[in-house]
Length: 149
Image (tube, rainbow, N blue to C red; front, side):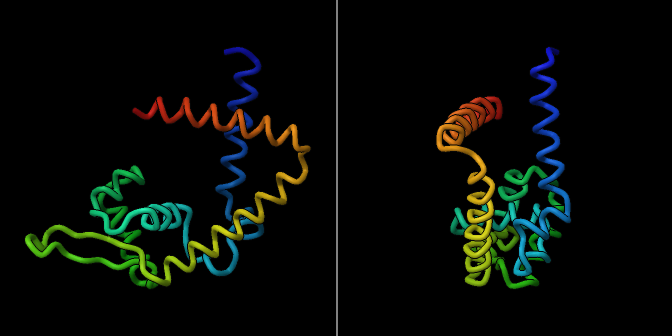
């Protein structure tokens, strides 16, 4: 592996570690309104905001976790009032989850705060640098998306 690839991999891993650290989340992106939620909880809530009502198994596949793990996340979200479960009328074994009004509000607030935080970070870069970053991130996203399929 060449030095450039090593540097890129190290930088990506460091960014991921920083973002996942509890201290970073508490001080920068996740304010008091979502401190009770883990990154996994927020990932599931974010997915629920984009889907009307979704089967538990589909949520587990999206989050790339096993059924017991997604069940625990959904239990937590439901107990906090952020999500609600319904059963299929034709087969009560089929369980669907949707985001509640409270969940929609918390995600909208969290999204706004995250956007403001990212704006502060990006303000440290010039317009040409931001354009370059946007282009490169889009290219990386395209490659990663293709690798998933």
